[in-house]
Length: 65
Image (cartoon, rainbow, N blue to C red; front, side, top):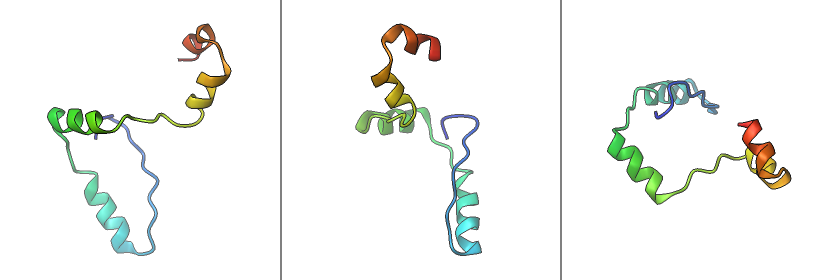
């Protein structure tokens, strides 16, 4: 993962699903892999950041970051 602390919301119906999700936590992407993934699809920071950007002028946004 790219960030040191990522807390995914896991959904599954069986214990096996949870076990597979836990195994996925060991996956490490190289910097080249991360760069490739970021180049093909822009990251959407999502709510609430996207709504803040629309509602507040840029000086206010700077103080919110």
